[in-house]
Amino acid sequence: MTRTDRLCVGAIAGAFGVKGEVRLKSFCAEPSDIASYGPLFTEDGGRSFRVTLTRPVAGALGARLSGVATKEEADALRGVQLYADRDRLPSLGDDEFYHADLIGLEVRDTGGALLGRVHAVHNHGAGDILEVTGAGRREALLLPFTRAVVPTVDLSIGRIVADPPEGLE
Image 1 (cartoon, rainbow, N blue to C red):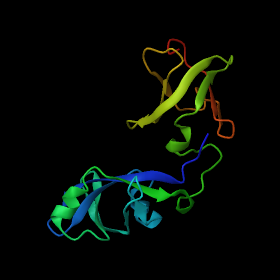
Image 2: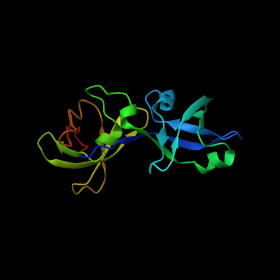
Image 3: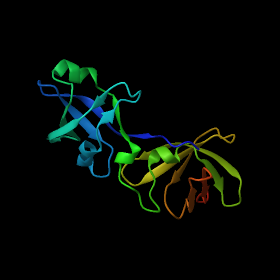
Image 4: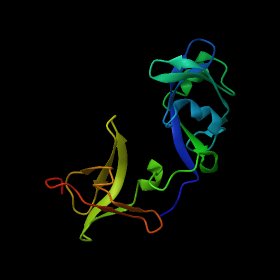
């Protein structure tokens, strides 16, 4: 299992105002912390930005990005995901994981049978859900990421042990 050196911490939702500000969606536990993890990078690492938060806006944060001075420049960045160096992010507790570290892990049931691999991690407000694909599955298996359903996550060997509720297997 390879560990990524940069993790996605937010995305630019578009321009905000006419002076080059952007609407910034933060994926951080504390949304305003995104500014302290900079500089932030585009996915390919081709550009980096210092972030200055200006104000909260509906569902996002207003922000200024270094090197972005006009509405047109801000509009051109719509949809760009922003990444922070892992070593700039806070240390996690024993039972906490960055989503990027879970994606690609092998998932086995408590009897050792392969269920697939984590394809994505979703959160629609009620907690994290692991999307498990592969192992001959026609449809993804969606597992609540709770201690009861996922008792073991071992990043060192790249494996999750899951105990899916009856009917989810």
